[in-house]
Length: 220
Image 1 (cartoon, rainbow, N blue to C red):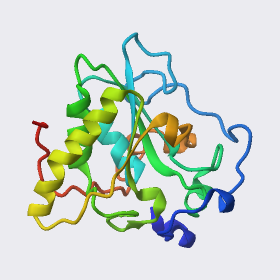
Image 2: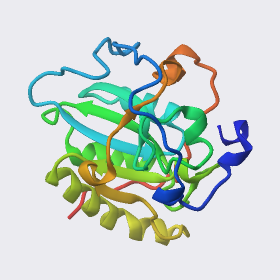
Image 3: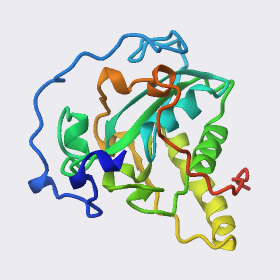
Image 4: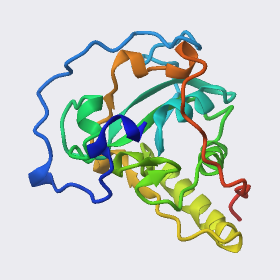
């Protein structure tokens, strides 16, 4: 999607002082229900539901890959990890919000473990590309994990440690994935309604998965 806005080709993170100011509330209404799963995009969800925020490039394809996993309660796309409150898509694409295109994954940990969700995340994209995924270039396309529990944070670091040597053995560079707690990363701001479940509404939409083809092992 980077070709839509020339200024999206920024590969240097904006500073808080230079970030766009944003606004005090969302400028649009977020749909209430997931078009595929029929579940609330913003809750409430069943007791015990866990949430993990994952960024792996274009959020259209990443969301579709996530909602197909067993145990996923709902998914939504949005902006996270930056500075601008309640950004729009056009603003995120300038590179001046600091946000990554992010997928909210709400899931049942009794069906889908933290480790298995993270292994899926690592395998669906190339976590060594820095501020890009494939042809999509810009800080908003960076790889990131924003954890809501200490267990998720540990699992993200452990799976990265297990995966990185295998990527290196196949000729890939260092893993550049940002791993932080969600409290440190800041709020998740829901994206515009037309972005939610975009590839369900537009089955022929452009958003390739940039997988390395390297399997992520279970951490020792």
